[in-house]
Length: 214
Length: 316
Image (cartoon, rainbow over all chains, first blue to last red; front, side, top):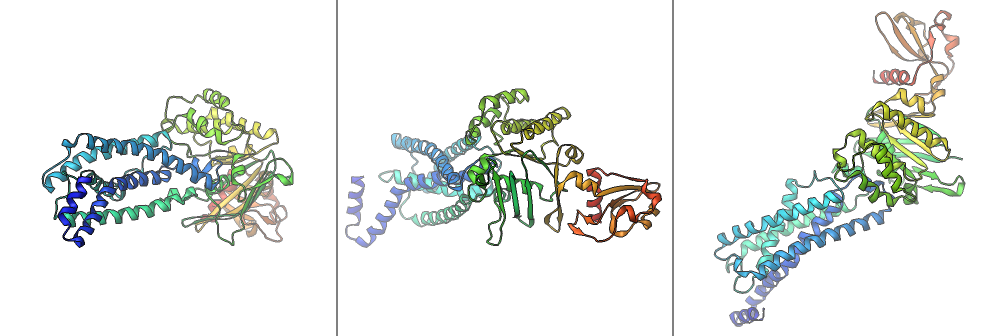
């Protein structure tokens, strides 16, 4: 890390105006694993609280506050599970750096996707498994909108997350191609914001008729 | 002392509105809820159970309460204390509310703890008695088995109100008989009441004391009758006659008709009160208005006939 910043400083010491946005972007790279954890892990688990809703959850003697508290606890449990899975993936990428993709943009991306999707599938499978043991219905789990609002941003953030973990000699983002990445990041962020809004709407449901109409 | 009171219950779901339903129950009473498909029976029961919330607009004065200890101080209001209110209601619904990917035994272990006094041992015993397989997911159980499992759950904690939403339709004849016997036993103690919706009107007639009849018109469900079944039946007679007899029947007494080539039937109101319309049509009395030769052809209708004739007349 220290070496990285030293190199950056040497490269750009004669042009401070250039280094600032660069540092900002690289900090973003470093932060993205956490963003990844935050968005990918939190959002599905939050929406999980209402997506797999059975009528019994509205029948059991709970106040509205208790229902929300129960959903939060359940989300945390799911969150921890995702966290362990994801952290394992990242740990492996650090322990075995030679497996990190290298080469040009069109070589690296397919490699990342190829690595990422089994992980995403595993997460989905575990999510379904969790639903099987808690709240049951899985019929609404995977729709096109789910892929659009969850999987695509998740993939993008995973790529940035990996980039963040390879900021030294294995930097995944070739210099000069960053506009593409910024564009993808912006698209992902917009989709995530929309997903947040949907999730927020789901959180507020206290009437089973609203679930039936979803 | 009333055990349960439902006042001006209104619930809107999409374009459908269940409008201003009011009724009350005394301890030991069985209330039958009837009406055509889509009239709002399930909406009413789900609203009572709390899975549908009452409409929240300021003008809505809908209120539901349950009396727990036979004193005026022990009323638990739906809007004020929904937790205690729900703890005292048991339910069996047409669509199983429990997760389909659970086993029957897990339902008791997982959800029983929300109900004070839930007896898990009794639940396991009832599952055995009702022959519910233990290693089969709920979604793989037959519709009748799911009803039995719900019934087992409902019977394992001391509820004040039992709500059964069309439970008998999927039960075999033998267990249907057991079910009715259970319902009779529940209310015989005089500590609780039962609300039972069903399309099997003839069976309902034999078990229910009171009736709540809901009718749907232009996407609005309204109560058209609440009262004792005997009163309702006393208000009508069936006249078996030829089609020409219709000319001798005062119009205000004719509630419905079934015209056939050789033999027709007419549902006639006996007196001034039109139960199905909640209004008073002054004057006519069946036994005074009808020609004497037709009086001998009168008979008491059963509930199904009243429902059939009336709903048919409304549709036409």
